[in-house]
Length: 239
Image 1 (tube, rainbow, N blue to C red):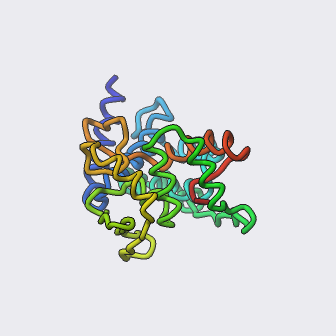
Image 2 (spheres, rainbow, N blue to C red):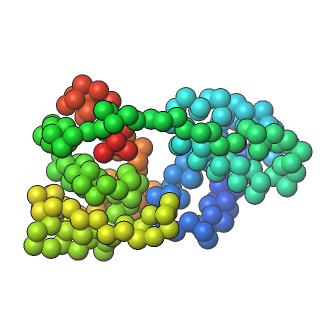
């Protein structure tokens, strides 16, 4: 119990530190999830962690995530280790090598991409208006899944013939206006009564905070839907 309280305090302090630079609630929630998993992967006191605990955690989780996602997790772990362990250079002598970024393989070929007809089939097999709106918005705006997950109503300007979505790209450090047609905007308008700042809020609150849905949740739903509708697993990035 004492160890758990000590770990909880470390997580709290670290998240307060990271909140000074990360303003997106969803990113903070995901970061906290990965750090908690690392800290609670071992029953020992966190002050007794060694490089072996890092190796065990990485080996345990390496197959659960795509290369790009796992690169993000390793980068966050390295940041946490350097923040918490004053003697990290001796205690985790190989942290740079263990958390080194791996080059992601070329994932998709042109013939693997989805057609407009494939998207229509996915939407027809989707029962939830909420998720119909998500799939269509993701596809027609040509945005990244995380950008649509965190989409807020203030970013949308509805027009007579559709809507403009203002997206800030962390990758390009710039804003982009994406147009979506009227038959897609109709689905978004149906969600306007959700009483949330987010277009796609999560049904669960984190520490009594409202957050958006996660890319992880999107991926899990799309796997089931695409297998049913198209007979194959689809990654949200293909949309």
